[in-house]
Image 1 (cartoon, rainbow, N blue to C red):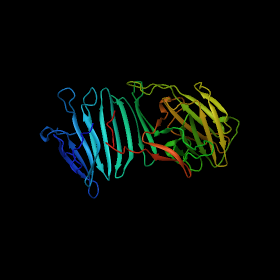
Image 2: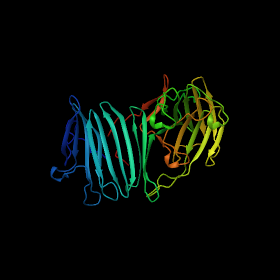
Image 3: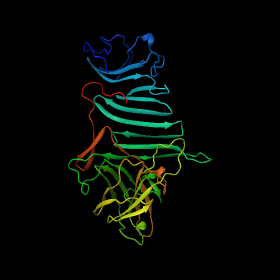
Image 4: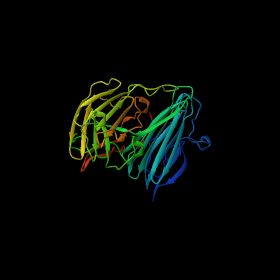
Length: 381
């Protein structure tokens, strides 16, 4: 809990004892961020971000305040007690170009690093991230850029075997959104509120060669209880001798936990194919039935899928583009998926500090408000 000021003043230590001002960072005219420690100056550790050990409940207690003229407001308070059994806790704060960033590190055998950035004048979310790793053998995390409306995941693991190969997988995060007022899956463009890849996105082309963005583009998001996919292409191939050689979607999922200790063997995966007419093809790994609705106009194909949950341990959406019906010209995917390998699938995640609303050209992001009163950032749980 933040200490209560006895008077409104530009000094965050006014009326508080003990309290030591450690640093003042200017943030424009008559504005600054003030870093204080709730202890006597002689008791402040040399490394202000390290834990403070001693009696039970002891911690290294610091706070950052924003000062605007004669007004003050708390930004953040930390109480570093080691942040986990290993006692390795660290706090790091930076202020640059009016953006306040706080990173925190802690844990035991599993270590974690969490970070968030906010603009101060006026207060608004900028970015957040989190990463967990186990003894350097396996790690996973994600980050969100709220200005761009995009998230990315990263995963590092050691493949079981004599060579102990280290594998890195990364890609865009599939957003998980609540129901949106006024939204209609078959008429509303996903807009900015979706993972977006196309034929020119080099990391997204997992088969064939990159091409023009107009030669295949894919957007996807979970909205309510459904996975919604939007595909744009300059040439549609609805049928061929095999569904694999026609234009189609592929949905890959895995139910095997991503939190395997020490090393990762090949994770089981399931695959569905979905044709332009909505026909579902159980393709790999004996997948359960899906319910699919489709709507296709001249330039866009929209698909609504139920039966796939966002909390699976891996999910990837693939558009298979065939311009001649003779084969798969290009596969555009939301992760670097490999046939039957669940460990190469992507991630779906809720968006903590933003939501989506109807906009003029489709869905658009809307940042969630920071608290009107009290500290702008709560302590990490």
